[in-house]
Length: 281
Length: 328
Image (cartoon, helix red, strand yellow):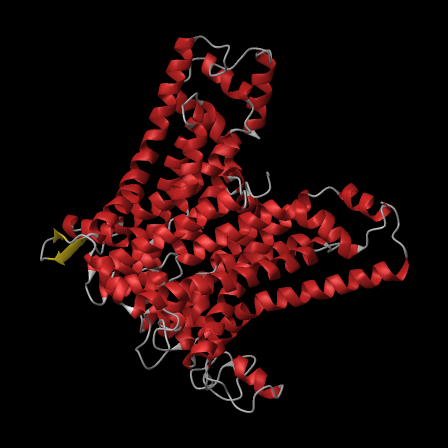
């Protein structure tokens, strides 16, 4: 590259770096505050002036979250529901995405547009019909009460992602396998899917995060304490008068940190999924 | 890896000109067979979406026109015509929730897109560390909204919250402010938590758009004597328009379903100042067991979302193909 001119550019660069640093501090600070408070002793929470870091740090909130509030149950529920819904969503979504991308079905663009329209409907739209039907079926307070709607709500976006990834797999790869007499399902599983792994992973991460963070359906369909997911458990911690912030943040830290690490590890894919389509104008 | 070697083998064995079965040159029978495979592959996903999303939305319209009573093993409906909508029409709570949801959406989306643009421009100007910055921007998106609401309620606390502490230290206020207890301040508090969580998402979409703009356009603008301000309005803004519209549309649609944040942060309060349509619908259904009117509120919410989407696509020329961004 051509060497930049003089001090003005250097100043501009420094200002940009400074602005970027300020943005990152603003973004990261609530995370720091969550972690710091999770290690603060219960007596130091609620003091004025607030302590900027826990001294001395303590695990007491963590112990309380698991021993007194039974937080492990919520983790188990969230894990079961999110994992099952992710597996179902990616399997069905990849199958559909492949069908749409690689077979001469009619109404391809209508399907894609329709999928997009469906994924923008707010969850509140289906709460009462699904609640009433689940009430009849005896599905309330069960895992499938969440797995099924989570799968349905995340399918459109997964279809969109897998469709765009499958389209990029070279035709020749697939064609040779088909000519060799492999069945379509076999071709998808052994030839196409391995080449579109980033797409499947992106769809999987999106679905998992969406299920892991979902609140309204979990709150409506799984109300019993033993069936609550993490967001519901955290929202309903404590009583109406006392909010046990230390416990809430200890529990939150346990579930927030692994997902944050997952997102950071697959950052490139997540960003590509997040902005997919938004850039191909 | 494995895929690579397969790819090589495939290319070596087949001349590139040999057409794949589904292209026009393939015989009609093969095409038909491939199409049947395609429909079979699409069927399971279509069945799930139809029975858990589309069907229930239509059923919700029917429920909103009925009187719904829960019974021990099920529920009973009787036709009520527009009675539930008449209840909403007469309920100040409904109009307040509608006004709050619409006004809140307008205000927060405006702030988020403006700030998101600034953030995107700053990060786009970074010489190094952009990847790291983008990774950090993903964190609020991946955070459980309920958790972020708890963190903000702690920051906003009127007796020992950090925000009040900073304001007192900076002599902006002489004593702690009860953020969540005052109508206007509560609106600001919910909006601030929303801006913190979703601006990074908007910024990522805009940043992706910025990176698509060719460098030589700026060079040409500079040669024509345009300064930074002029080249922003002449080059950046017009070319970023599609990304901006996608970000706005996506955020507006999402914001109309606002629920988690006010549920945890303010419980819709003080009073009903921050009660969104979704929160009102939820409470009507699960606190008061008024499934008819509650469903009517949710149908109005969907109608508002559809209306906004149609206005956007018709009026501002957002092409749907562009809007495949994060549905999460």
